[in-house]
Structure formats: structure tokens, C-alpha cells
Amino acid sequence: MDLKTEAVIIGGGATGAGVARDLALRGIPSILVERGDFTSGASGRNQGLLHSGARYAVYDPDAARECISENRILRAIAPHCIEPTQGLFVSLPEDGFEYRADFIRACGNAGIETMPLSPREALALEPRLNPLVIGAVQVPDGSIDPFTLVVANIRDAESRGAVIFTHTEVVALVRGGSGMAGVVVRDLLSGEEFTIATAWVINAAGAWANTILALAGTSIPMSLSKGSMLITNTRLSERVLNRCRPPASGDIIVPNSTVSILGTTSLRVSEVESFDVRPEEAAFLVYELALMIPEIKGERFIRAYAGVRPLMQSGETDDDRSLSRGFSLIDHQKEDGISGLVTIAGGKLMTYRLMAEKTVDFICERMGMRVPCTTHSQRLPGAGIGHTLQDRLLHLRREIPAARQEVLCDCELVPRDEVEALLKEGKVRELRDILHRTRIAKGTCQGGFCVYRLLGMLNELNRNGERGDSNEILKDFLEERWKGIRPILWGTAMQEEELIETIYKGLFNLSGEGQGGAGIVNEEL
Image (cartoon, rainbow, N blue to C red; front, side):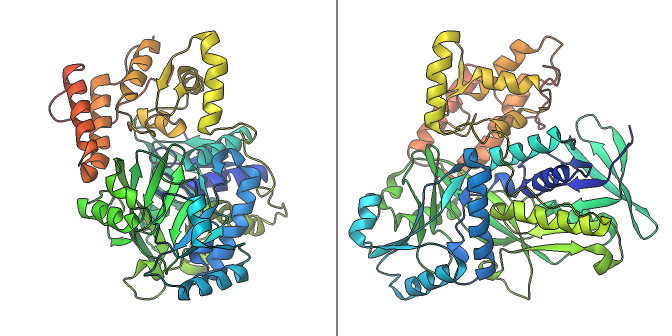
């Protein structure tokens, strides 16, 4: 099976999905290739923050201006992915007011609205704040669901002709003279290899950008920074909370649906797959963030996780906080003499749409096309549908009593019909594909009480023969879940894990080491 297209996009994170959508809207055929599933990298391992840009206003004003501009655009085109919570930059006694004055001034210069609050006003808005707070500044932060955002971009791109291959790895770049002629890819589940002929290769692989460029014998200067985060069992605040001080580790809390996400660290790493969180990192985050909300010390944590940020290196420095969160578009014809190869790297989830726009603008210019970008005004699929917990409650109240349907995930109220509709599309190939497209396993039990229901449903619907052993798929999920539980295994988290162990060993007779591999969900369901 050999294919041909105008552009091949490598990477199924937010940037790659945004490029696919932008190309499709401008009428340029493309094929997107992703080694895992969508949001497998930094796009699915971030804090879910809808940046106002305030965090960068003092030290990275260009990034701040990009953020507030994209903040406003995303609120218009993707309201179903966003909870417009607002945010507070909180000053504690040890912070003083010197930085706050610089902060308010820098936000004004970047076009970010601010509202200074007295201690009494801040505590009225967020009663769990440290009562010693000396003031706060309100900014237009919010929370965003990166999984829904990325899938919405992919759905829109596909509806306009883009072709998507997940679980498919690029194994070679095909040269034609001094430029690109195509890519060789391998389906990681079937083992099939095939070639995609193309004039343009767009490297949107994020932290894996240099892995792709190594196939062309080149690289870009990039630093890898690991950020670790913790998920709480409850929602600690109604607004995003930041420390009003120079950006540092352990200074932000983001409300996300029924939970809160605490973060982050910034540690230089050399390996792209550096996703493990050490217990001392978890303890550090708890200590630092308890200075803002003292109740954190007694909170139950349900998971720790980490993502790797690809930061464009500028000069020799070991301080990743000093590196810009801006992005770079690299024309490898200019840099390395390889025509038809471009890399879009750096940036953040907040600026994915802008990164895609600049990339496609460049390609259109080289192709001699004058087609304007419309992603800033075209709403994403699902923009009129609510996805908050309240929306899901209303859906269940209307639908389930009449149809007597099963709820697969009690924490996040995911009904069986939502998964059945997803399966009918025929595009999910592994268990994690389903988890990325729904809120199953994203709630307080982190899949402990819902994934086995999901696997039971898959077995029930599989009328064409089992593909992959369900027990091995379940073991693999539990082993992956354990990586996020181990760093926070104290107090009530320890008690819950003992309960989960009893259930799975007793009810399902699971024991011993897992055999690896995620298994395959029947593609023909």
C-alpha cells in the first residue's frame, strides 16, 4: 500500500493536528502520521492551563502577547474545550509587593487585563487560600481539555479530506535530489511498511523532533525539560491559582473538572521518554503549594504524572525557566540544504493554532498559493455541545432513565452509548485510544473501577473473535496506572491501592508480572 499526498505531517499532538486542520481548510491534501495515539506526548501530559500569558509577562513578553491573543481565539472557536475560570496571582508575605508591581505593569504592556484584589476580596473568592495572603491579581486564565481539543482538530481535518494514521512510525525519510520525496512508515500493530510520496514533510513531533531529523542527518538546538504534576481527589479552587513571584517550580494550581492539577517542576532531562515522577518531586510540590492552600497537606492525591517540554535552546544555560516558551519554524532548505522539510518546534499547547498557521503560511508561500488562514474564525466540531460535569449530568438525566443505559465511568459519568458511538467509527485500535477520546479513567478512581467494565463491554461486542487477551490488556493498564500511583502512595491513597489490589487479585485472579504491550481492541466493532 503506497500513497501519495502534498504534505506529510509527523506528530499527532496539538500542533500536528492543528497543521492538518489548517492545510485541509486551505484545500491542501495531507496525511498525518502518529507513532502512538493523539496526545501521547506533551499535548496529553500538561496541566490543562488556558494561559492568559500573565505567567510570562515580565520575562517573556512576546510569549505573553501570543498567549493572550490565542486565549481569546480559543474561547471563540473551542468553547466546549474550555472552562473560563479566571485566575489569581497570589502574593504571600514572603513574596512582597515588588514583583507584583512589575507584574501588573508587564501585563498591561502585553494587553492582558488585570484586577488587583485586597486580601479580603481574594479570600472571599477562594476561601481555602492561606489566610495570611497579602493580596492577589485577577487575570483571564482558565482550564482547557487538551484531549477534546486535539480530537476536534483531527475530526475537522478528516472531514475535509485529511488522512490520519495512528500507531504508525516514520522509519525513513526518502530523498529526491536535494529535497524530500516521501517517507517510509511502519504500522506498529500490523508490522506493515509502506511509502508515502510527498513534496513536503512537516516535522511536528515535539520533543521527538530530533529523532525525526536524525533520519535526515541533521538536528536543531533543543532542550528537554520534564515537568511533574499531581492530581488531587477534589477540586481545591474555582480559579487557577499562581504565586505572584518570578516563575518557579511548585507555584500553580489548575482546577480541572472535578479535580485539581498541581504543578510543576522543571528538570533538564536527556531522554525523551522521561515520564517517571520521583517521590521527592511529589513531596516538593505538596510542600510548596500548601503555602498557597494549607489544606493540600491533608489532601488525597490520585495520580502523579510528567510531561517533557521541548524548549528551543538559546545560549548555554541550565535554567530551563529562563528559556523562552516561544516557538520556531525552521526551513531546512535554508539551514541544511534539504528542500521540502520544515520543523515547527517549541511553543506550548496554548499557541498550537498559531504555530500551525505560521507553518501553513510558509508552505503556501513556497507553493505560490494565496489562501488565507481561517482557523482563527472557524469553530471546531462540537463547539455547541457542553462537556462540563453539569452537561454530563443533564445528558444522563435525559437519556439513561428512558433507555436504561449503563454508566461505564461513575467518576466522570461516561455512559455506554458514548463509547459505542466511538467504536462504530472504527478508528480506535487500542484501549488507550478509547481513554484519550472519552473521560473514562480521568476521574478520582483513575480507572480502577471502570476500565474492567470497559473491557467487559468490548468482549461483549466482539462478535468476530478476540484480538488480544483481555487480562493482559488489563494488566498493562494497571501497570501503567501504578507508575502514577507509586510517587504519592501515602495516607488514603495507600488504602485505596490496597482495595484495588484486593479487587483485581480476588475478582479477576490477576497476579504476577504483566507481559507488556497494550493489546488491540477489535477494529471491526
